Length: 101
Image 1 (tube, rainbow, N blue to C red):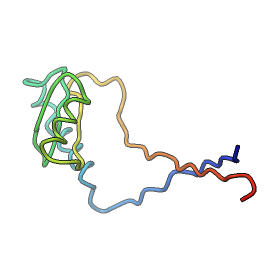
Image 2: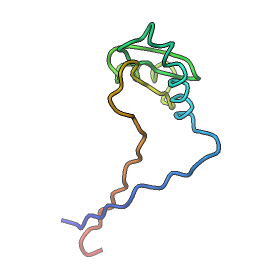
Image 3: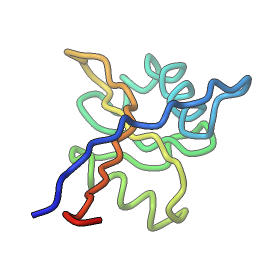
């Protein structure tokens, strides 16, 4: 079996303006208090700063939003008590080197 090397995840460049996913997350945070009245204990999908779907299962809410708008950055967040902060983390890159190469 070949030798495996785990490379570090790429460093994300800081941008002056946030990317679309981050903009949708910020919209969710701005709307969170008003969302509690209608969507408490549910997940909501945010696209272009507006709620475009909701439900009790996160994956289902996301899939329905993707089927409507295509596979673009859409934020799906939980409206309720959060026990921890949700962060976006890049995956590490894995390179496999075969023996003899």
